[in-house]
Amino acid sequence: MRLENLIATVRDAGRKAMEIYDLNIDVAYKADQSPVTEADLAVDAILTKGIADQFPTCPMVTEEQADTHNLDIGSGRFFLVDPIDGTKEFIKKTGEFTINIGLIENGLPIAGIVYAPALGRLFIADTDGSCYELDENDQRKDLRVRDCTDDSALIAVASRSHNTPETQDFLDKNKISDCVSAGSSLKFCVLAAGEADIYPRFGPTMEWDTAAGHAVLSGAGGQVVNIDGSPFKYGKPDFRNPNFIACSPHAFKRCLS
Ligand SMILES: Nc1ncnc2c1ncn2[C@@H]1O[C@H](COP(=O)(O)O)[C@@H](OP(=O)(O)O)[C@H]1O
Ligand SMILES: [Mg+2]
Image 1 (cartoon, rainbow, N blue to C red):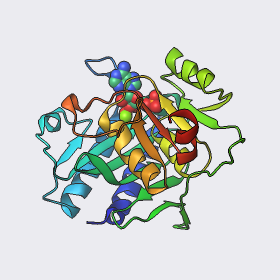
Image 2: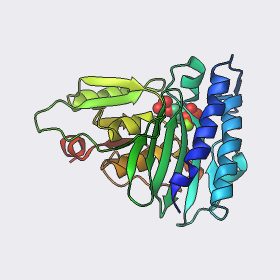
Image 3: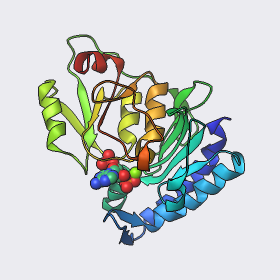
């Protein structure tokens, strides 16, 4: 079961998202007041068809289909899909939105694809242990987290649209003064590509927001942990995540141990 079989589907989905992105975007609001666009639904339809065609027996939970949120997961494999993560970035046209497919087994992400079509960046961690970025010409670059020295300053990345005072407290407590903002699951991929060291998240997220990016970061040698340093798991009630820290091993040593 290799996720590289889904790259063509993800690129199709990206083309569809960009068609809508380039027009005037119609925004509706869900019951929880979060925004949803035509792109969330159109991309969801392409991804769920592509996954069902390639992997017909593997269950799927997707943000945009509420009936999949009742799935009883157990410890088996299942897909977690977020068709457009960073809907606010999509609406504001910052380009920092992503298409996400994560594959979970025994509560942990074992593979994932994150595609940022407006930036032309596709990140994949596959079930064979490979972890790389593909550019629009299919040039492949292996991903590896940054390996800093003990005295080098850590670089943090944090949510552009959903930041909280707790995030700033964490940065202050750990004397991290360099913090860049980014939208969506791109933050995990920025760490995986060695462009920053730590992503503290003190604020709500859902499992489909994090699964694919978590897989990419793990594949590149990084980790995602609960605030107490314990493993960050999937298949939780309502698919709601607690606060977490995503980081390189070096940043983990500096901030969490
Ligand atoms: N109040 C809230 N409750 C649940 N999830 C929230 C939330 N505020 C933000 N999020 C999650 O944070 C994601 C965006 O992440 P970021 O802030 O890093 O860009 C959103 O994904 P969607 O855009 O797919 O809805 C959403 O799921
Ligand atoms: Mg999301």
